Image (cartoon, rainbow, N blue to C red; front, side, top):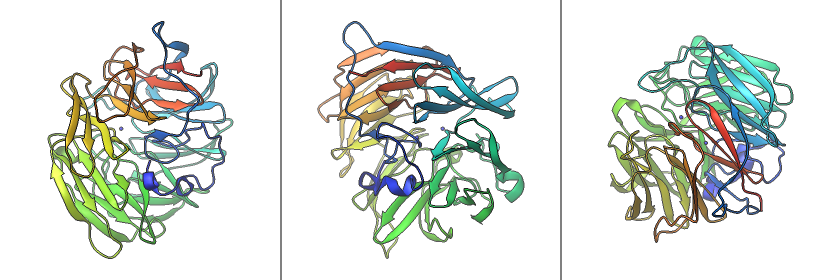
Length: 403
């Protein structure tokens, strides 16, 4: 629209073939898939304001960032083409750019790219809104293989295009396409398995473990469906019908429980997961209606955006086990939040970047600054002491938060 193996089970499943520094953020929502960074060597800015390391322009869109080995990857649209762009993390200079023909696709929003690249070892993977799948050499951006899953498999393209990031699991590349996913051989792009042709949702495939089983959870237009990632065989589904089929936020799995949330007034639910039975509802509420980016879970509390794509949306804290609202920070808009070192890094929809302790006692900012103008729906990323933010125009700002 980028974790969780208790906070999701283990990043090894997401990054089986990836070797990276601890400060790297090579996949959507970070190495653990939770939107939470383990990085501790950073500090919020003081009253003088944030240190802006560099600014760049990558084209229209809402793609987030991945960062690995001193490079940052994202995507944008300009001049009738999408581009996957690699930037130098220190300077912001373009290292390489791979472009291909595309449409703006401004359907009820500004359009442009919405998916986020994935770095796996020496390769970069990307899924476009139209179903183009690219495997590129991470060093030079040269194509290794490409495919178009819509043309090859006949799966429906969701109303706003495919939106999830590719996920690497062992030798497979998992894509949220079709009703319950598609798996390609990551080395060749060959189809390993596919599900039905009905509309996918917009979330990223989510790897977790229930009992002894490793499962991939796909958000479709009407359900969240768990399958065996090696075969595509369905294990269970939670029916979750949302207006316009917009199930965009990734599920959050913790301690045998799964939290899911969707916008357009739908709300959220917590279900209990067991190895041999269908998921069982624990509670259901409209306390958190996450239209796009998933919340983060820390110390038993969810921190995320409640509401639609207007300035009326709020940042909230909700207790996971009960669904009890702890606090509301109004006027946040459809912004985004990640977490590092016990602190929230929050980018409001109007471009205000804030840092605050992740506490159920309230949103008490220790640093805040307007770093961008225009609509900011893209989740920021912290990697190696730098926070990367962007707006819909593709204007990127790199904030240096190294001590």
